[in-house]
Length: 125
Image (cartoon, rainbow, N blue to C red; front, side, top):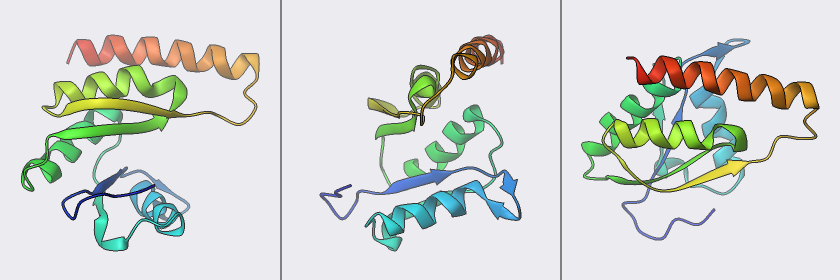
């Protein structure tokens, strides 16, 4: 990952705790290991779903004058996540999906069903 300008930041989202570690903190740790400077990472630590990820990230970015974003998430989650970040007020210029490691047919069916139910829920908020 390459950050071009001093104003560029990465927002690590997630307020759920897994074994005592917040998602955002674990993501930030992985980003630093991948070469992202620690001072370029913002943590959004109160969200429990994608809608809250988007609104929380928007709040952090708007105060810095940032509107253009690239949404990075699981490949099967990119369309809904991008829609929610856009609806939160950010300009999604791209969605990048990380492929899951060797998903089974059952995994893919679960993700498709989960995204459809979640999309319905998000559209009716």
